[in-house]
Length: 159
Image (spheres, rainbow, N blue to C red):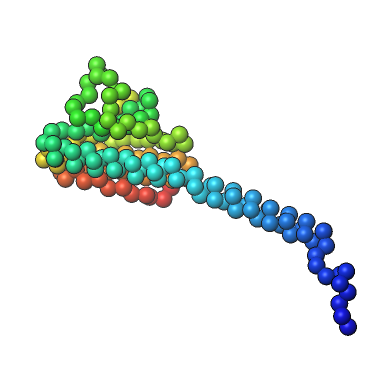
């Protein structure tokens, strides 16, 4: 027996059901991917901060003068400065001035200075040392700078 040509293919109901299932699957996938990428900005900030710290160390050694990595808690920015910051100095003159992530929940340091955190890198390669912890709801990064060698280390401990 030959199949009836009018019965071959899919019905409109079958096509609508398949499209509905595909739409639900795409929506669920978007939600899952969106949640996982929520920490991407924090990860990028941790990379940029650690790169800035390494850059400050190398500049201090190559130029034979101190460089400072500075975080301003008021403007939520960080950058480099090639001289000490005193209270009269305008922090808007920072080199490589960058904003901290918008979804940042907490940034802490090993030193408590109102509105200002800085790590000094000396021409000998050493530093004043410091630990910077940045985190949001999904990710946490701990960036530490050695006092003796000035080396920068980034850890991603579990929350």
